[in-house]
Each structure stands twice: as C-alpha cells, then as structure tokens.
Length: 268
Image (cartoon, rainbow, N blue to C red; front, side, top):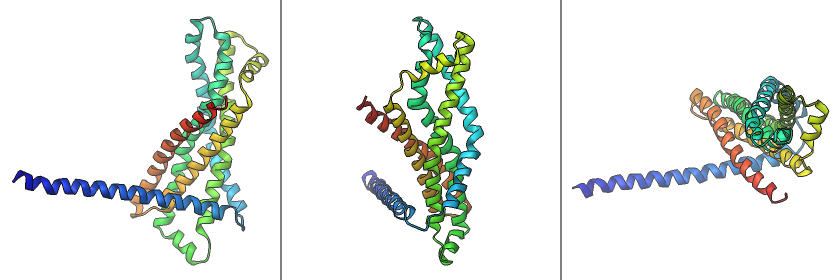
C-alpha cells in the first residue's frame, strides 16, 4: 500500500524536476534570442539618438547623488578599516597604494554596478513591465513603430555607455574620500597622495576596469529590458519584473566580476 502511494509521489517529483529543466532551457533560449535581436536592431538605422541621450540622462544624472555619496563613503571606510592592519607592520605609507588598487581594480566598477542594478535595473523593469501589461507596447507594434528598437535598444545602449562613466566618477570620489582620511591622520599632501595612488596601477588595471564597467552596464540594461519587455500577469507582473531585474542583474554582475578578474590575472 505504501509502495503504491509513494509511486505517484515520486512520479510527480520527477515530472516537476523535468518541467523545471525544460523551463530553464526555454528561458535560456529566449534570453539568447533577445540578446541576438538587440545586436541586430541596435546598430541598424534609423538610430534613436535623442532617446539614447534621454536615457543616458536618466541613468547618469539621476544616479549622480547616490553614486557620489556611496563612492565617498566607500573610500573613507575602506581607508579607515585598512589602517589598523597596516599600522601593525609600520606600513601606513602604503595606504594610498592599497586604496588605489582596491578601488580601481574592483570596488569602483562593482559598487557602481550594484547601485545601478538596484536603481536603474528596477526602474527599467518596472517601466517596460507597466507598458507591457497596459498594452502600450502592443499599440506601438500595431501603429508601425518598432517598440524593441525604441524601448530596449536605447536603454541598453544608455546603460552600456553611462555605467563606465559613473564607475570612473565613483573611483575618483572614493579616492578623494580616502585622501581626506589619510590627510587627517598622516598629514599627507595631495600631490604625494596622488603620486602614490597612480604608482602601482598599470595599463591593464585601467583596461580591466573599463571592460568590467561596459559588461556590467550591458548586463544591467539587457536584464532590466528582458524582464520588463516579457512581463505578464497584470500589475503583479510589474513587481516581479522589477524584482527579477534587480536580483538577476546583481547575480550576473558577481559572476562576471569573478570571470573578468580571473582572465585579467592571466595578463599580469
């Protein structure tokens, strides 16, 4: 009797597992097609330059204050927390070099991407999701407008172009925060601090930081657009699209960080 009852249960579990695997690969295929469609339409005229610039403003200027505050705090806190460990070895003079390496190699692009994932990714997912559930995107298709090119391509290009700029700015603000902390405790001049900051950095560090920022920006844009553009189930779907955009983008950013760090370490 127990065997007879357990058989349907095992069958249901296997069926659910099989369906989950099928859904995973189906979603993977849809995402792949979505990315391919972006590259097919993004670089083919007509170009929506005005909309791209507007989206760059939305991504960059609207995130300016949050990026500034976060970058400054990161620089101050990292410098403050690193001092006790270096002071034990009498190596506090290495603090500017340590700050520059940590910020330029990892913290500036990563912190910027995480902030943008939460602010920009959720905004894109919610905006496109609401347009999908209210049938505005369908109306654009019926009227002959290309909604994918106007809504998706412009936003992905904007994030891809703007996140590297924001990451560079974050790095500068974080180094400024580190300088204020070092100057207050060590009395180091600005010229000496800057010289020590750029001394350990190499061309590979700047290139790797730029590549990471571009990849992060593209990821945030494409994930937010995919979640919003394919939103369903009414207003509930809008919330899921915004939440999915944030969670997925952050998860992918961490994975890409590990991969790019591993690749760049081969060239050092």
